[in-house]
Length: 210
Image 1 (cartoon, rainbow, N blue to C red):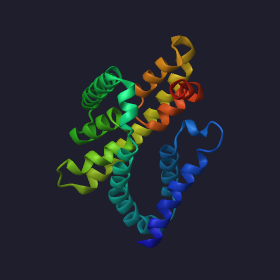
Image 2 (image 1 turned 90 degrees about the vertical axis):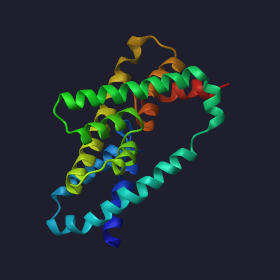
Image 3 (image 1 turned 60 degrees about the vertical axis):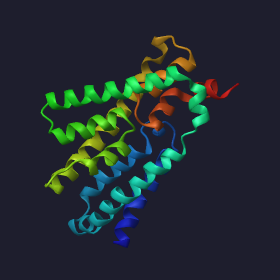
Image 4 (image 1 turned 45 degrees about the horizontal axis):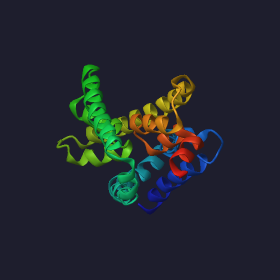
């Protein structure tokens, strides 16, 4: 168990360190860690078997703790300064994205559980939302549930990265001010890292400079 926890932590740390490289931060630590995890599937079977308990432990206990700690980062004063309009934009974006993603997922033949996980991940805050909602879904097939979790996280991460690159590409065509584009990026991208990457330094300066 200890060695498997060590392997999982190494993947997470490697993902964070790789984001320090130029342009790689657009992908995000979570996507990089996911790609490294996929690459580990090439490892011998006994190594994958040893890592499995650690993966389950980390994804269950640590991710829930991470969601709680993420809540502590929410600055209510900053939220109040943003105003009611920003809160309404967030509410409409979250609700609309969840409904649209769920309907599209079902239309393309995804199971009800996978559609719910994908919708919550795209509508709320990415992989953390997927893993936060998953325990609430009742199922008798734990292996299928685990596969749905992995697939939903992969879809959410990849789509977030793709749309981050799209928004960066179309930014000059929108003719928006930096604060306006910041609202667009924050309202349309579910991962915090993706929204920050899409906005860039100019948007951050526009929101932080008095």
